[in-house]
Image (cartoon, rainbow, N blue to C red; front, side):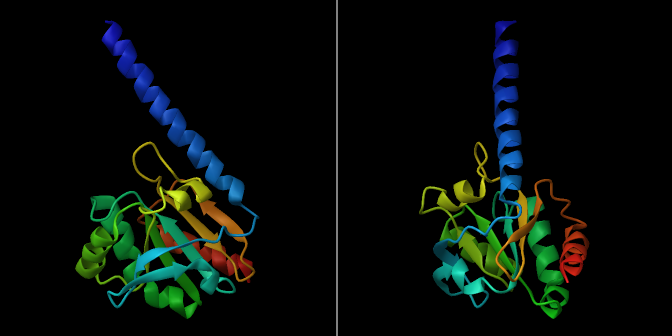
Length: 177
């Protein structure tokens, strides 16, 4: 009987940590986007240093996802890939971030032919995830940050609807005009 209470306690603790992090991510709303540099896989399959500073002055989607090639992460990445034309037409750039390795990102990018960079937060002890407050117990929480041309985070999606996210994002950017 005591084992059930222990499992319940552990489960509730994990959920509360994740819930706290989801709420914490929203605290970036209205603030300057935290700048980071890290290794990334680019659309052409090359690996290099990604510097977010290079994107300041552009409309930007920074999306954090738990794990390359997992079912929901694959669906989400495909949605961004399939709608990249609409996003680019509105001058919106996409950047994916996870704690996966560059090797994992290379496979994921190649498999899906993703037309946007995938940043690895692996080598910096999850510094980017901590900066954006998306760090979960094991994986990053799925969160999306919208950044305007002034470099301000104007929308945070803590609970992401991966099937309808593109429409929600386009509406948010349209309201910024």
